[in-house]
Picture 1 (cartoon, one colour):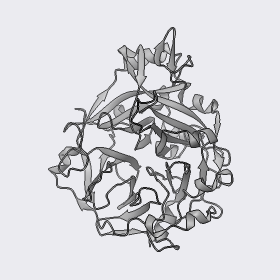
Picture 2 (tube, helix red, strand yellow):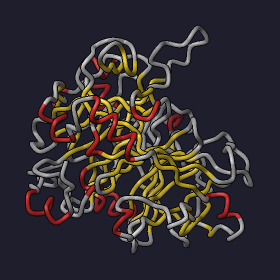
Picture 3 (cartoon, rainbow, N blue to C red):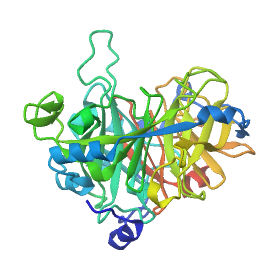
Picture 4 (cartoon, rainbow, N blue to C red):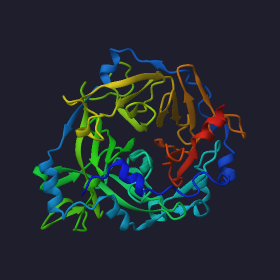
Length: 442
């Protein structure tokens, strides 16, 4: 498939209609009345503190790329790449608009500031046990014009976590993404894609089993957290493939390929491993596990923002960024010519349990879950000078952000901050103007 450049997507892109127009979405009383027991973030996380240079070496990554020959072998065996457009043409699920969401789903939306757009998954996906939506990225990350060809697209990452002591379900640990056509903001549709990894020289593939706590779509690459490998996985969105066998198996079966019942797969093209070895949670001087990801287009060059995975420790949490390579032959990738990736900037924050973060100019925006784990989260705007968060009208707490909130993704073209909730029966995908976030704390 021919490579699309930013200039081509800009000519063909369409602006989302009514992105920031109209009034904020109405919330139910359940979303407005937050009990004091659900309040979170009563204590400010304070300002960001620069990490010592020596400590930043623990954040160093090493790149490992799958051979092009293996990837081409798999593509050829499965009938060729279908790309994002091919998946969107076959979208078979419809998202529900806010009016069709349940009261519980609307209760998952932020209280202050309120969302200007919100959607809920189809009934089956909204209530499927074990599957958890945790990460989001959009074509606003992919290119400056916010479009992928003629489409506006949202990608949402889900992971299967059963949590039962009995023998694990066959889906345990599987990772899938919802490829959402958001070109018409009043009629979103999506299709599921299973994440896989090539094997046997591209003659077969196996399921990727990892938690998708973070996900960034940059140019034609998708970068996700990899909690099994303690680093990151990278995918090429031109290389989406179609499975031709409908069965519970994953990989080559008989004369075709199966993907646990999914029609489409996205094979990994490489990984980024932490050079310091396996990560450890809750230890100040250990190699950190990566929890969430986002993109910052206000740096030069663009940068990948990462946070330390949540843990039970009350001490400081690390947040940092990696610069994308500007070399033409490394489009959408991070490493230098030797395959190393060094942190360009690193900080610590007193905000423990970070669920998502992004940076914009000199400000960082940090999402923190409720103290109970079941209430609304808080969203803090931090810099080296201090931290601020919105205050809810109902109880004067800072528990004003979404319920069970996941990662954060900022669309520079529309000015929207996207996130999603993963609480049971409260699953929603929503957007809030970043200007409203700033107004709520100024």
